[in-house]
Amino acid sequence: MFKKSMMLAVIFALLLAACAPAAAPTEAPVQPTEAPAQPTEPPAPSGEVVKATPGQALNMVFLPKNLGNAVFDEAHDGASEAAQELQNSAELQYLAPASGAAGTEQISIITNATTQGVNAIMISNNAGDQIAPAAQAARDSGIAVVTWDSPIPSAEGEQVFVAQVDFDETGTVMADMALDILGADGGKFAVLSASPDAANQNAWIAAMQEVLTDPKYASLELLDIVYGNDVSEDSYQQALALVDKYPDMELIMAPTTVGIAAAAKAMQDEGLCETVKVSGLGLPSEMASFVKNGCSPEFALWSFKDLGYLTYFLTYLIASGDLQGVEGEQFEAGRMGEYTITNDPTRDTGLRVLMGPFSKYDADNIDEAVNP
Image (cartoon, rainbow, N blue to C red; front, side):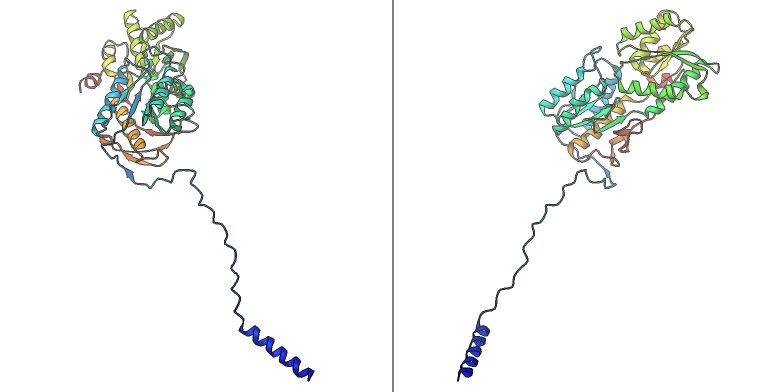
């Protein structure tokens, strides 16, 4: 009887278990998903040639080294041409320190433009790396910063530099002109530069000094480097001081349009054109008379109007967001054609767009250059 009761109890328990609802399956805990990593660098260029979208209202500042310099006025003309072509309704601001002012006065102009919230600043740097913090502050505020003619040596605060020519090539051009003028026997010469903080001048002179180590130029002797601060009167006096200091000097090389014209005038006024020649980088319209009277047999330059035009086009593209301003990007600059942003091989860091080319002027082509 007891065994029968136990069997009935077991059967009853099994029936209850079979009728009970099945347990819900246990799910694995949901793992939190991580946010996708944000890119730390702009995406690589697509390889296409970027064209500007006309008609965007962008407040842009064109900042040369100083006012009262004909080549910077020509560059401004080129920038204004590009602004009109791109139908930018905002007026282009042409701001710079007065002629003879310290290069560091550019800093306050950049700071004020940053405070005003402009869209872009185009700088021909005359203050070396002293200008970098102000340029970086502008960049941190979302302003496009492009340099032209003279870069920021460290590239801090600068997105791209528009180089008129290859800076290393400039040294070769000046050394070649010195050899052409002085002849195979060579001679002694001095350099009359702009300001000690002009990055482009310093780079050109350094490139020339490097070139002079080549045996080809062994007959040339560089005596001195002096500065006229791109002020005509100061440059005039510095040229005369060189003559007094170095009686056997035969050439003054001035890689500045203000300096070359002032030095040539000084030699002309003192009746020294047969004894001391003048060469360098000059504006044809300012140098024509000195070429014809023999004071400056040969000099070189590029188109500052084209430089201003190209600079404006590039800066407009960056400020509008059509270009990122990174290595490898290609863009179209109106009548000047296509360009590519590359690493700047003449600096430790930084990007550049290379314009070019050089043009040399002498008695054979000076009239055509002045009156094309």
